[in-house]
Length: 240
Image 1 (tube, rainbow, N blue to C red):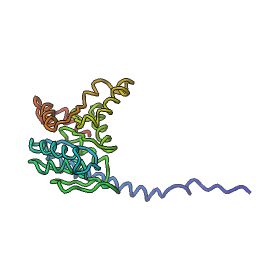
Image 2: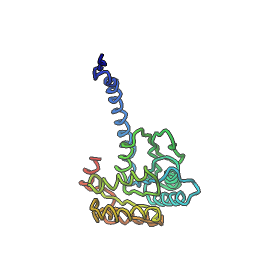
Image 3: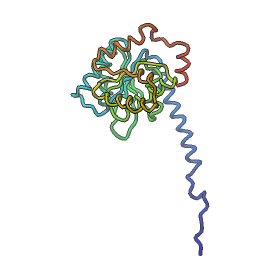
Image 4: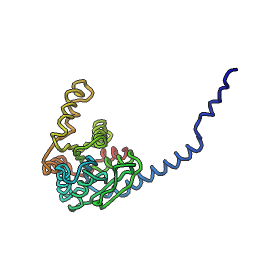
């Protein structure tokens, strides 16, 4: 006797229930964007700082991040980090000790992430993609300290957006040449060699070690044009 084949619908998930959950999820996503736009649009200019959540307080990278962020804060830049421990905490700490706002874009994770105590402004996100928009949308520069997958993700994100013209060009600064040197060498020996990037794409990246050099590079970028967005840049940023 042949085995009875069940109707395909027997294997389908409860579609109506899923659609209801997805619909409510859209509103949660909208609320993250609205809250972020409302609270961050008044912070100007700002620098987004990235790096590992696993870096200890006594590590040289942590101490250098504190120094860089304090210099930026005293120079008039709000400093925006992921709000968590490690390099993120160091960025917020340096800004907190300086004259400008210390901002944390906190993400809800099942492990690792917990908000640090050095945030003048703290936002909470469930979704990485809405959080990533906030890092980019109001940033006058990106400072990328040593980090892992998350740091690489943010680094690649801004490179892609600037390369494709979906975001305005801003300084993208990698700090710690010894850490990042191998990656940049690979960009040149593999990506550039095989034509997957162009020579000008490498010009988007700067590598530095000295904290004061970081601030000077950002000011040098805006020396002749100022921090105000042109009409074209305003339109670009509206599309983010």
